[in-house]
Image (cartoon, rainbow, N blue to C red; front, side, top):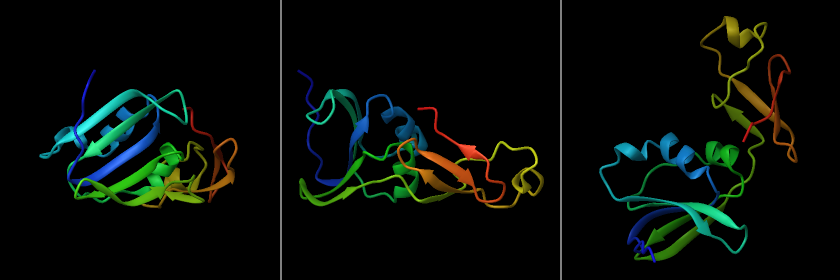
Length: 142
């Protein structure tokens, strides 16, 4: 059996949908980390059949909006003295900026490169967002 020790102080990103852990790992740039990081994939889960987990032995700033967009079922555990100090549950964000880009060639964001790409949630069940400027819809493929 594989054993991953508990961390003394840091962050555990838990309940990641199986297969999305590597996407979050890469997004956070954890491959370049100078501290201990564990990416656990396809771990057994009580909630789902399988899940991914990321353990970070360090305090880092996390963009909860982006993480909630990637996988709204994620739980963030803040660890101090090997115990959970705080538990944060994520949801699909109502609004996101500069995370996805509008694919409509007639959108102002295609012409004016410095404009912030803003999308707002229109359907939480299907995770559908719309561009704030041209109303183009976006639905994640994962």
